[in-house]
Image (cartoon, rainbow, N blue to C red; front, top):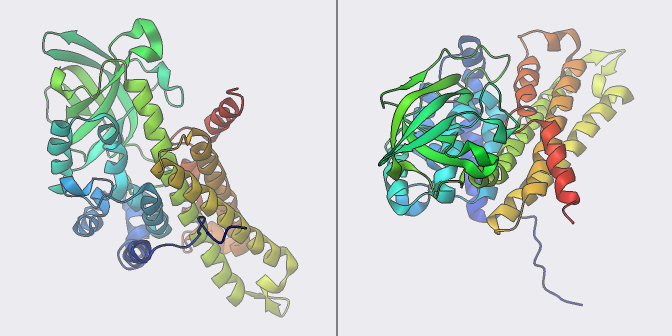
Length: 384
């Protein structure tokens, strides 16, 4: 029998340091102002600026371009902690991770130098894929980019764009050849200040209200050919690779929200007394909290395994979708149970659990609905 132990569930000292840095930031800078930004829906610029000083907004930017260059597993450690503080503020801090993912995947050295440099200088980026008629159905987008000499003429409307009205540039998906469906999709880097780019009114959302979400419109925008990512027709492939990378992070955020709900429930159940004893000692409540803990442990392991697979260069579509779907489903279930444990108090804004439930709901929708995640898993299982 081999004496080697290649599988380890331990974090390295550096990973523990990253985790602690994010945890301290969430406790000291995010959680105390979460309720305020949830009410106002203002973009949490003061918190974002502090996060920029620590490198959290450029954690995915490779070190050679001035970023932290963390692995996806390390990114998940950060995402869990920040979302523990507030999922909306966490999204506001991490918006550029999604925005620059296509550049990480398919960008040239020149494109990386220019646009990663902007993030290091404090700018933000947004990811423009979703449209009014195309969300989970990526191939259903209608935005087009018609080649005219050394430019493309970009036309279309995107919606539900996180960070749409605060970002300096966008990665935009459009059809360069609509006749061949997804094989004719391409991806471009588009500057916010170009003529024809406009941003609509931000949405008034149920949860994650600190994360700006708005429509972005492109009306005859002249995009230099040099801003094409990869080759024409690479867009769909880029989008799928982005999902493999982004879904573990989404799952990690859900674990953070669920963990916060568990911790709030434990504290409340220790202090709330009914029938002469703390409510956790009633089996109905004690078992509910135990189930929360078990589901969080499972979700974290699924999340970290999927991130590890991406870091290893392995095919991770199935595992990323499993992690995203499972983690966000349990986050929704756990936050609903937390409200039940709090009883009438949980239904008021005086306690944090109602906000956690509102924040968790969106996680089952964005990055591909959980119904779509199940379709992905089924497809992967039957690939043959």
